[in-house]
Image 1 (cartoon, rainbow, N blue to C red):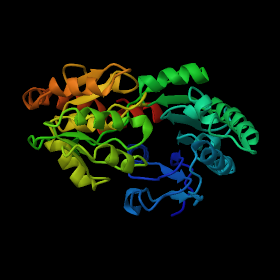
Image 2: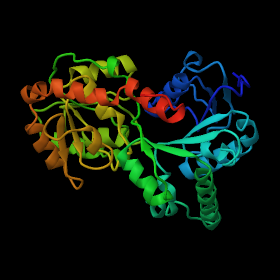
Image 3: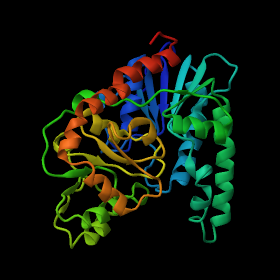
Image 4: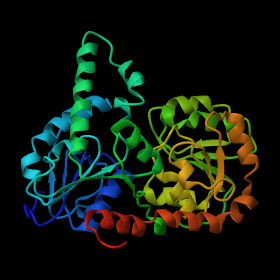
Amino acid sequence: MELSGNAGRPLVVHDYFAIRGGGERLVLTLADAVGADLLFGYRSPDSYDDAMFPAGTRDLNLPMALRRPGLRAAALAARFAMERRRVARHDLRVFSGVAAPFAAPDAGGPGRNIFYCHTPPRFLYDQRAHFASMLGGPAGALKKAGLAQFRRGYEAAVGRMEAIVANSETVQARIRSFLGRDSTVVYPPCDTKSFVWGGQQDYYLSTARLAGLKRVDRIVDAFRMMPDRQLVVASGGDELAALRRRAEDAPNITFLGWVEEDRLRRLIGEAIATIYVPVEEDFGMSPVESMAAGKPVIGVAEGGLRETIVDGETGILLPPDFQPADIADAVGRLPASRAAAMRAACEARAELFSEERFVAGMRAVVLGADA
């Protein structure tokens, strides 16, 4: 697929399409809402089909082999920087991701640059020390110098933006702290109509990717303490094998791995409640999807979850330093009867993050249209 070349059409520039995720769906929804062409670095077979992409689409077909986020972002940024002249042909440009902003033409020229920021790259700012500790070996110093150069380029690219949109108040605060810029919050879109109440089966549900920062190990440990309560883990990730071993003594815990979207929606719709406790999540679509199905969420009072879950009304928020025993206590305070009583509040809360609200908010920023 190639760009239409119609400079009268807006252009959305996004890092890449690796999976069928919320960020990817956001970009496709945005491109459709403003009638934009689309430019991105690469697309995985695991992402969306051709039919989901606008006719004016260009894939740079970059290799997907680089796993470390900083190195992958640097390679993408270098390629996007080569596209600046082509991107400048469009009068309205919207950038999404970490590397895509490098394609932004100079400020002050014709046209507008708008940045939808999912988060400033954590490996350049508040998680820089952790990431730098992974860059040892003979080439470690060179890699660290490369990251410093990438940060300068990233901040220069952000400086070329006329307006910045943040995906949450949490990210808005990071933008102000790390980049010294103001921004407008437009929450990501949830396809709320696809998630519906399906009754209550006898289980609690975790859908978070099985990686360290998602803290699913603490959920597993909590249910090892509650042999009379059922936990279903409907996701995969690097920690799947280790978590299965951890739960070998717990027949009440079931691991399904990644499941098809239709089955995942059914699992959400039939659960008592969902449990989602990541570290400082930027926004967190999973709780919104759960609430759209009328299911309350046991979450953590940090990051974007403070903006989506209403403690005591649409779920229970744990303290940031929670332990497995705190999860077990929350499950005890959220039996099926209380969870069902929260259904209406959950469904109403989810509508604040609907696709319609996202489209109206982005049209107001990008096109100046009334919401």
